[in-house]
Image (cartoon, rainbow, N blue to C red):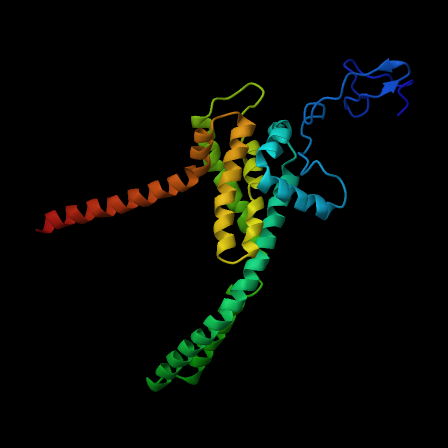
Length: 281
C-alpha cells in the first residue's frame, strides 16, 4: 500500500490491516512495532512458533519449544492466547498431536493384540464347543466367532484412530471446563489478563504437545502424562500471572474432582450398607 496516498492512522497503525509498522514512509517515522498480540486485530490466532518455513517444520518446532522451553512460549504468546478467537488453529494442533500419538500407540497395541487375539480365539472356540454339547446349534458358535472377529477388528483396528479426534475434542472441552472453574475460584484476575474459557482451552490444547512421547511404549506414556501436567501448570501460571502452586491446583483440579466423586459414592454405599445392617439386625 502507498502510504503517501493512504497516511498511517494515529499511533502509526496501517489504515488497511491496523498493524503497527516501524518503517519510514514519506518522511515520517511510525511508532515502534508493538509486541506480539498487542498490534494485531482482536481475535488474531496465536502463532504456533516464532520460526517460519515449511509447515511441518514449524509444527515440530512448536512441540520442541513447548517441551523444552514452555515458559518462553507462553510468555511470548500470552496476549494472543487471551485475545478472543484463534482457537481453531490451536485445537487443530492438539488434534494432530493426539492423532499421531494414537497412531503409534495403535501400532504397539496391534503387536500386543496379535498375542491376545490368539488367546481370545481359543476361548471363543471353547465356548462354542460347550454350546454345541448342550444341544445348541452350530449357528451359535458361528455367531460367537463373528462377534469375536468384529470386536478384534474394532479394538485393534482402525476404529480407535477414527475415534481419536472426537475423543480428544470431548476430553479437552470437559477438562478445560473443570480447570477454568478452578481458575475462576483460585486465581486473581488482572485487567490485562482476563479469565476466559477460550484462553484456558487454548492453554490446555498447547499442553498436549508432550503427548508425542506416546510413540514410545510404556515409558513414553508415563513421560507424556508428567510433562503434559507440567506444561499446563506453566501455561496457566504465565498467561494468567499467578503462582505455581495455584496453577498446579487448577491443572490438577479435574483429577481432584473425579477423586471427590469416587470417594462420595464409596462413602455413600458404606453409609447405606451400615444403615441396612442396623435395620435388619
